Length: 163
Image (cartoon, rainbow, N blue to C red; front, side):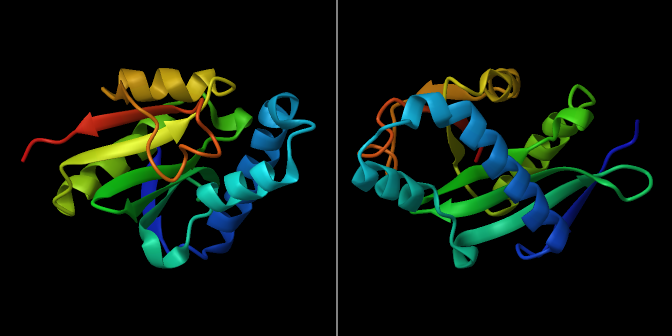
C-alpha cells in the first residue's frame, strides 16, 4: 500500500479529527491509571500535554491513494529541543508502515530545522508506540519538562541527529 505524507496546517480538519481519535484512545488506555486521581494532578497533566499551535513546527498526515487520512503526527519546539507529538495511526491502518512513515517525516523535518535531537514522551499503556520508536532508533532518557511533576512515570526517548 502506498502511503503519501502531506504537511498540513495544524488546524486542518482531518488533523483535528485524528487528534480527537487519539484523545479518545488515550482516555481508554490510561483510564485505569488515572481513575480517582487528584483533580489538580489531572489539570496539571492536561496542561503539560497541551500543544500550543504557535509551538508547532509541522503537522503531517499520512494519506492513502484516495486521500483518506491514515495517520497524524506533529513536531513542536520545546525549549532548545524538538518533540514528536500526537502520533496516531487508527487501528484500521496499523501494521502498514504508516507510523514508520510519519516518524521518518518528523525526523527529516527536525534535521531540516537543525535540531540536534528529537525527543518524545509516551507511557507503558502504549506498547505499540514504544516498539515503533525503539525500532526507529530512539533510546530512553529521563523524564523531561513539562512532564516531571504530573507524569513522573512517563517513558521518554530521544533520537540523536547527526550535525
